[in-house]
Amino acid sequence: MPSLPPSELRGRLEADFRQRVMLLYRSLQITPPYHSVEKAILALRDRLSALSEPTLRATATDPASQNALFTQVFIDSGLAKKNRGIISKLLADRPELLAPECQPFTDAFKAPP
Image 1: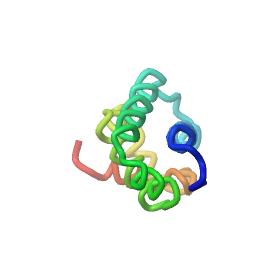
Image 2 (image 1 turned 90 degrees about the vertical axis):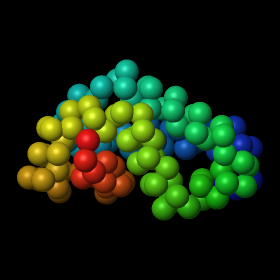
Image 3 (image 1 turned 120 degrees about the vertical axis):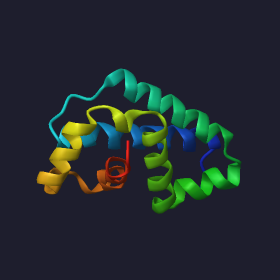
Image 4 (image 1 turned 180 degrees about the vertical axis):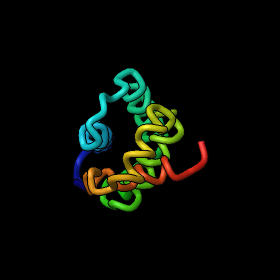
């Protein structure tokens, strides 16, 4: 992935974020708040556009950096507040429902609202 142009790296990160968010809701069998998901993707796009190329490349190749970025965007965009009560309850009662790649988002539901 490092040899890709920055625009393609951003596009892949946006697609990965969208996939993870949709998988989160699908795993929990909840309809996603589509408008809020789109707002979160736009927030991610803005955040990625502000990164320097070396930072973007480092983020694209480091899963821990991606998880941190995606979780922060998930929180900052307000997506973590949508269906919070239902999702928190499901995660507490049945954590095995959550797909492993969605695990970083659980931090958003552990933090105070």
